[in-house]
Length: 377
Image (cartoon, rainbow, N blue to C red; front, side):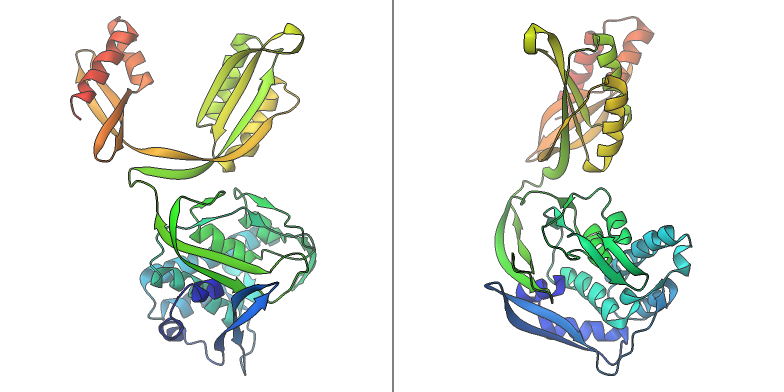
């Protein structure tokens, strides 16, 4: 479906196919055709196997095939990274080393072609950064070489760790281990649609059909609308109201959350029901740290629940400089936008140590470090 979407968006089929022929996967023929899925015209990409036979290959065998090709070193490395991730989780699930994993469905030549082809397509289309929505996984069961397994399959859910996913409503497998591994390698951020100027749109059709929605994958290619001095990333906000915690315990909980991976934690005094004084605790973190932060929150605060919201934040480009003061060297974070330094924030720990060591007010050290850093702008 990813290859089909790239072809639908303008990936030139013949040069792309010619590059993949260097893999030496004989007996297969790539075919791309337009079909309609629930009212959406899309490109259905498939491999006509002909006399090709499915072969169970190991990671080293696949590596030999890829390394002997004339694909770029970047495409080779990313292709093997995808296979390596699948081998890693399959090995963990079955209790064997990744090198001992023998791929079944994805060890076949058509799957090697699919994975290398998707990564090559990204390179040929000049895609520098990719974003994706939350991932629909489906539910039910799926028949595999290891028997009937729950959906999402064990390898799929392991590969999606840290990536936002949801059911999707279909009693079928909507995301395979191969698809999950490709998303993990190709996508930088998951969540809302990024700020961009769309230039090309393509739809890749899946083989299955569902009555409730078109089984297609959409890719939108364009130019980022962000400043080169900013970056977007997905974060989560964890919020809870506390009315039984002392200020000291709340402060300890804040520090514990920061130690557990929170990017920032704030405490806000509020008046709760029945006039009780309370605190709103808010933690910002990367999605991958959600489980660890919730565990810390429940353990340290005794709260019975928390609100989790997924959002996107824009981060200013930063650099760190070191300035010399009469009380020692202080690191200062400089925020830059459009070639201009717009903020300067001395490191708290450096200022604290200098103030304590020289027995001077913290504010005096902080202000001096900030003044000297601003002089470097």
